Length: 125
Image (cartoon, rainbow, N blue to C red; front, side, top):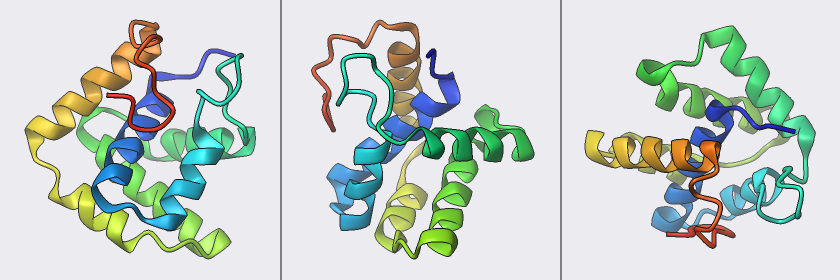
């Protein structure tokens, strides 16, 4: 299963945010999303990937709205499952354009396989 770039952006952004805010619910979501827990590089919860892809399709995921799509995704999971992502959303909103650019680069590296050896579990900087 080849995960799309948009997924790698979602994972990379949330992974970065976790180490800034340490929000418990975000840690749980990252466990479902992480492609580094299994040797086949598939997330544990494929339904989460499908939810993300559906949202991306509905909102036309692109570089200009990528961060907004992640916030919408978190908000949808708050409504559907009762997660609390306030700290995470605050952390996302506080990211500088340079930080977002670095996250985009990391996501692209992971997408292309150039980041395969980054040692990531979560926060594999």
